[in-house]
Image (tube, rainbow, N blue to C red; front, top):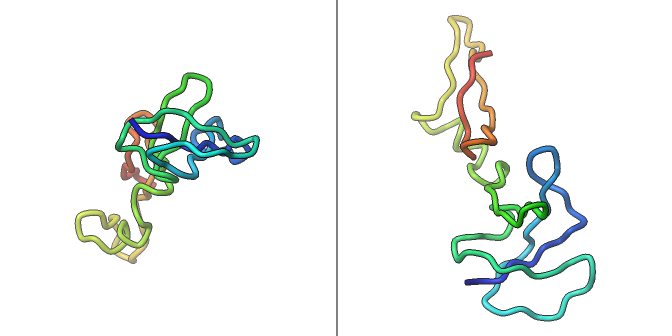
Length: 105
């Protein structure tokens, strides 16, 4: 198990109810308040996940799951267009599945 350094001042996640994981280390070192350490699974990465203080859970950070450029250039992730070249879909983060979904506009 690793240690996640939590920065309680930076709110992230759904409705900004989570807090930023600013660093993940094997061992703790002294930090100033409002930062603090929590145990975390080995797969947790700083800024790719956030921490929900209310229940001690970790969740994917939508801003770090895909590079925006990849969503617009990868043939498998291109959005549909109408005959005039206008986008008919958009990417929307699904908080329940923690993944990007295409949604019709």
